[in-house]
Image (cartoon, rainbow, N blue to C red; front, side, top):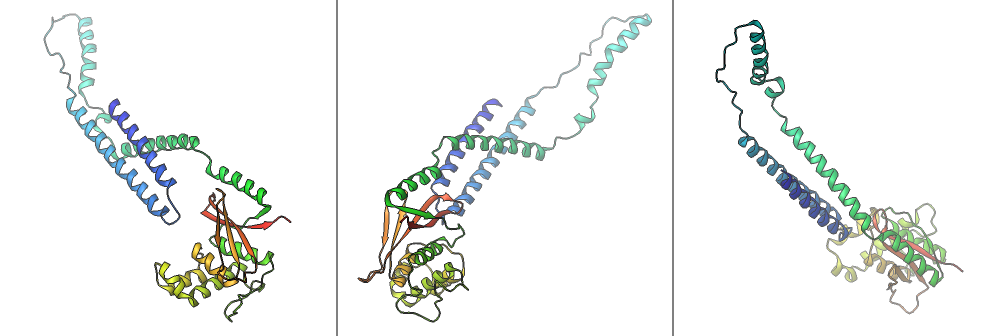
Length: 303
């Protein structure tokens, strides 16, 4: 039994190590699938271990012998004390042969399995916690690296709410701080301006992005994995995250260059593609620092 328990402990450690590695490599697009895969791996291992325990218990029960009471005759005692002694000696034997309530009651296998599973999960969580403590604090490392970069470049970070609109809100903040015009050079009636206080700024930049992609479909269609109308509808009307394509659309629509700073020191430059660019916007990009994972903040010049 001890060897089987040791085997199961090793299997749990191996699986937890695999799960941690999978979660580290997950992106925002693959995270849900990886979590489902990890849950399925845990379920399969649990079923296998439960079956092994049940098989082991069955073999153990089959190998147990039944003690046969000694029924040989002994000397017959005539006096009353001897009868009393003989009677007392036979009572334990009779009691042992009679099934008790506990012996008649069948064990609840489901409760036993649930108890074993709870104990194993608790052990796995403890091991995962210990392993996590040995891992580098990626979040704190990213914060420290970013602060060093901000100081060297004379930038100050304006934190944007982490809600799925962060890219558009960060660009809107940059446009407002740098006093850009409300619209691109070719205004459209369905594009509300940045200074239109009746509309949240991130919705304004979402609308401008969606309109620009729709009007310049030939530039963006080769990179889309869904119909154009569905894609721009998500940009305009939902909290769908934005990425490189949306940055490019905003750079062209507002005629600005956009620099995206990462903790490694890398600066991704998205250019407007014109010779009359008004200014450069600065954003910070995080991989680990916020609850939703990837995140954009606005970077303002200290002076």
